[in-house]
Length: 231
Image (cartoon, rainbow, N blue to C red; front, side):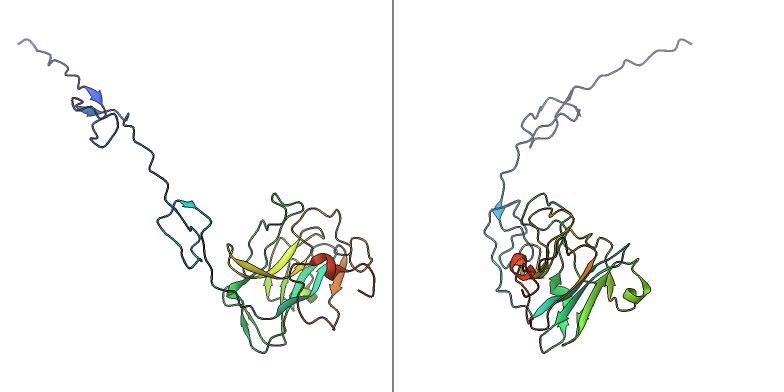
């Protein structure tokens, strides 16, 4: 019996999607070459925390609208940058009520920020964090001395080495109010920022707010740092 070979049938290749720009109605097998028009961008507010957030928007057009911010009177009363990893920030609640910290954050920059004046890292407080009226909330490095850890409420690995600005803020990443700062987000100060006439005082020192201070610096670090011991 002679074996007869079946003829090889080659299917015509091409784009078989009728919605494609290069649809080939005679194509019998799709070869992955279909081409499509880019969809028109949808302009709108892309920030989910805004009142007019548009989930369908693909390009933010700067139209985001936010509710007016109403923060409690929280500010930084101590900032320590010591040897090894002995570093911490102490936040004081000067208001009359316990404050839920879920709407607060402590964004930072590392040395010279890529965009001067803007934070690089948005750091939120731990879930469920709060601070009672007249009490403090301490953020420290996880490898701090046991004496510091005993007072610490939460840990943060990337505490400042003296030249990394940190601010206490209220709000969201897209809409926030600066309550207080140690250093700034404007650029690398060198080893640290000068405070009260002390050169690079944010490094290898513990800064303690004067008892006469009753609120944060609203981001005006230069004025609050002062130039002499009387400031």
